Amino acid sequence: MREVVGIDVAKATLAVVLVRDTGKRVHKQVGNTAAGHQALLQWLTRHTPAPAVVGLEATGGYHEAVAEVLDEAGHHVSVLPPLVVAAYGQSQLRRAKTDPTDAELIADFMRTQHPPRWRPAPREIRHRQALVRRLDALLEMQVQEQNRLAVGAQIVQPSILATLAHLADQIATVKQQIADHIDQFPSLRTARDLIVSIPGIGEATAAVLLGELLHVRRFTSARQLAAFSGLVPQVRQSGTSVRGRGRLSKLGSARLRKALYFPALTAIRHNPPLHRFAARLRAAGKPKMVVVAAVMRKLLHQIFGVLTSGRRFDPTAA
Image (cartoon, rainbow, N blue to C red; front, side, top):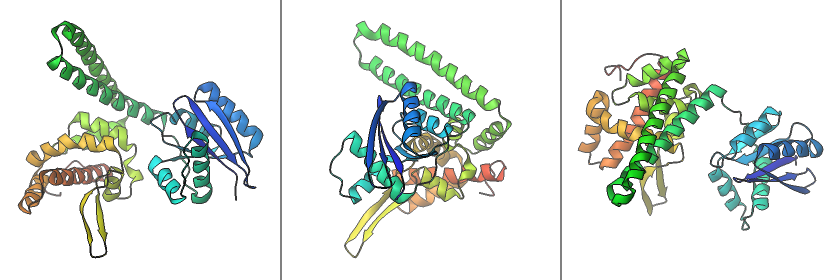
């Protein structure tokens, strides 16, 4: 048995447990703040041999700062998908759910499963991703305010219109920041130009893809990229009686799936290989959303192809 540290991350606090090689468990709670992170580092220095082996869940962005602090201090950090940890807890018949018990579950997962080490993306990639996600949030707020304007009482409409004007300014500003950021790096400019050469994909979608994919060469195949995006089918079959309808796994990046939906609709009309592909699926009686999902997956294959080959989209080659 090895010593490991499990951290249950919340917005305001971090529940920490150190599981010693003897099985003894030592608990600690600190704030999820810069001061709390430094207190955690000091506690680890006193209680564990350096570097510590630390596991924590990816929790809505609240884990990022403490993970970066621990990594910069030289600790071996693993950032774990919550679904994986939850499934592990079910396999262990865990019933109690509190912050300390969740931290213990994460520590036990680290001790028995040996997940890979996490490393933060370079700063310029994190900045690009932050800008893209900020733009997505602003666009969502804009849609919400437009819906409120359609049904709101007349007395509140001036307020809604003022908010919409402010959001429009912010959206324009962030779009320009994204364009400026991409223009700073020749490799990003090249990647953007390759992606927008695919019919159906514009610069806005290309920016999202560049923000979410990070490095396309970390994927060994287009199918692996599709799996990362949750666009591979999930088959449900067992014995002779269970023949469930296939559906998307949706275990990957929801942001990528969202970004590819409308480009897929455009590609069905204007991307020659995908136009023919969609026609074959419709002729086979496939439902509309099955066709769209399949085209989204094929779009990812085309994106992977142009980025890894370094050549613009060629419909004849496709």
